[in-house]
Image (cartoon, rainbow, N blue to C red; front, side):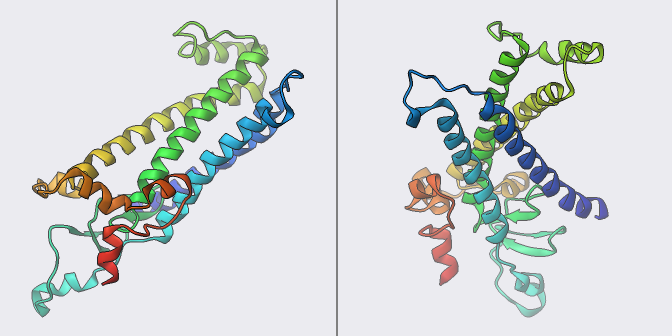
Length: 263
């Protein structure tokens, strides 16, 4: 339990450090390296478009990250005494989290990177957090590849060029042909690639569970799927204002789960 509580502190710090390093590299390396085309309009310069797109992705990722933490699942502490006080408990959709020390409704899992449980109130923000984190990491990887290609005059036309970049760069780094800052960017390329693929896979997995009307906790326990259409399951999590929530970080306003909690 001590190790889990320590991970609950280290993982958010790790995520925030990666976000800060990514922002610094984008601001001080990738954006200045984009030379403006004299023939192009100043309004549509590559640096401006790149900066606007990166800010959109990072703002949505960090915004939903904060909302996942703020919009914590309800603590159904009454369920712990249901056997003695005969209090109704909506099992098996509830689960007691040992890390948070509380019972949450529609418990999915405990996310160590946010230090919070994922349940009915913050599921949509968590899915959007995974989506935009994946897009921000993969987009930063593409910008980093363009930067390394221009600085080191490396061509990535061959499909295996990215896979052989790390061992080649390590040997050149110890020989003095690659600077420390360039080697750091190369290492970040593989980290962005790994985080981007992991978040994309996790996002797709969560969406499939939402379409089935099932949580990860229920899947592990072998609980049967609710007999509902996938549209109702999707609307229960994302609500009617799903398009606005996809563009701007916002609470689960208008979702069926939030309406049920307000009653």
